[in-house]
Image (cartoon, rainbow, N blue to C red; front, top):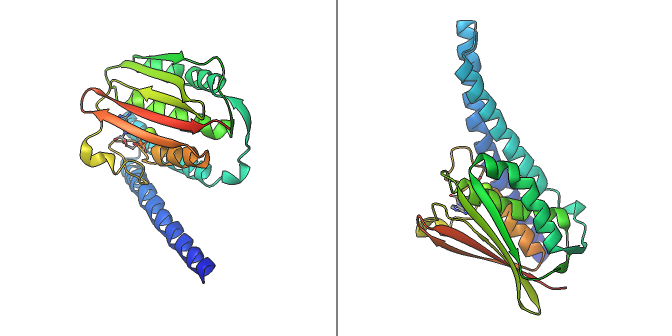
Length: 224
Ligand code: ADP
Ligand code: MG
């Protein structure tokens, strides 16, 4: 009966998630349909229609993409990887987005190497989500600071700090709920995914945030 119960729980969780996704995708779809109808009625499309339609399509693409990576744990590949290398790679990947947003990414690695047993791609995805959120929290630009250290000989700590808007107390508990977003074009899936990935690595996440000062995401990962 325990297994049966578990299957039922899984089903309702899948159902909840499906309802959420359907809802999230229906909004941009409704808007796309509206613009198509307008264009059909006018026999032409205005430039701004195309811009909105394209951003709505981007939104759907984003949601579907993140859902796919959520549904892909089967391809998880654990091996020994160096967190320093991994973080450096992530910083390179985000350099363009940072420059476009007037953001400078700085990093301090207190250890030369930090080898752990992990799925490189998954961890990169989690780190990318944290840094992206940091960049997006600073519409006028600023600094992202990444700090890697080994506070104990059993774990590594990575801190991602930004100088952004901060997270109000009431929103802190919603962080990580599927589809919780305060952004116009957000998906509200990034943090949930990152949490799941860190959990799969037996790690933990802590958040320290001050309104209009910034946010720190502290990630602890056990040394294998
Ligand atoms: P999204 O980025 O698509 O909105 P996330 O799951 O990544 O979804 O984040 C959910 C919400 O949490 C964001 O919309 C934002 O309100 C808040 N948030 C996450 N990280 C930060 C941060 N570093 N600074 C301020 N707010 C944040
Ligand atoms: Mg995000």
